[in-house]
Image (cartoon, rainbow, N blue to C red; front, side, top):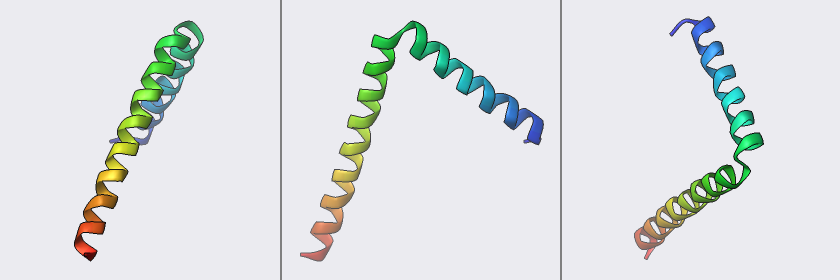
Amino acid sequence: MPVFVKKLLTWGFVAFLIYFIAFRPDGAAQMFRAIGAALIAMFQGFGDFLTSLMT
């Protein structure tokens, strides 16, 4: 992917995040909370997997 397109998509994503947080703060908070819960569940599952390998 050309560098210009990559930069354009990155800045577009950042602008969308700022817009989303500014005009829909409740929705943005729920989205980040859901992403955090999913990440925690993934890492906990990975930790359980490694624990079961060691025992």
